[in-house]
Image (cartoon, rainbow, N blue to C red; front, side, top):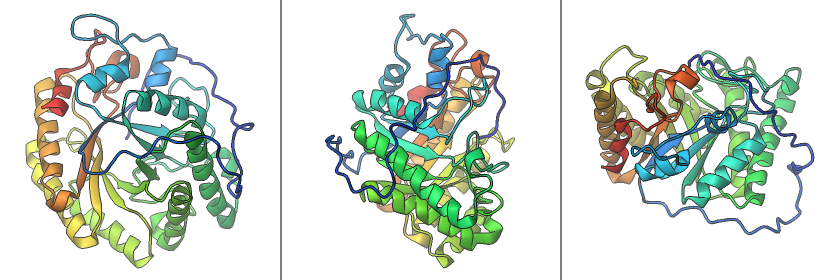
Length: 353
């Protein structure tokens, strides 16, 4: 997701050096983790990576009646049953790109799970935003060889998931890379060198399955309406033996400068084609619409949910809104689903209908 925000200086990130486990450790975890949610129910989700930062700056959330309420509860009241959380390796405390540390991600995951939410973890493998236009290696990995990068991906993935497990959280989904049509960890992991990208993706997959084989691993591209883009990438993934369970898509008609009615059929076609061509499950892991056009965004969400539910054989797993709580005056982000008075947009009612 590409955007610009204007927030405030926030609290320092957590230091995890004392609580991360070695990836090769065989010591048994004494904490009993909460089982993964049974498969079969449709995921209606929200990515809330900004929430800790918003709360740290004192932002208040309100229900329709004007009462203060926890943001996660507000989302749950509107039908949201899944929370997606991005995680960065060593984030700064910058007002625009800080937070989302492993420790902060664990804290938010625990909060969400206590409300009965399902959890998705989105690994960016960067210290800040990773998307189609930038896939910058973490500073600590910048001078590492490719062999070292493979170890970095495995260990970081394993360590973060171990922190979650120790806190009693087993994510239902883990996303290895964020919007990676041109790869990740540039330049070594660019998709022009798909063989190396495949190895990096497989390290994330292997680390995830080492924590719990039932966790589903997602590979995520943008422009979910572009079937050619997806066929090119996942044909290469097949040739290079990439291991994954779910094909994740972003879908933003706003950035396509088009009404959703023009491209929703292309999204439906691509969802169906990915299932029939590769035998995988599919999920729209990012979607959003203009916060000023509540009815249009509501109707778009209804159409996207309908498209994913229409995928044959229940292979369409769910739809996740990207940062509905990121209200414009705080974030500068046009595609939130929140009003200037701190209340949720009626667009989110699409998730409870």
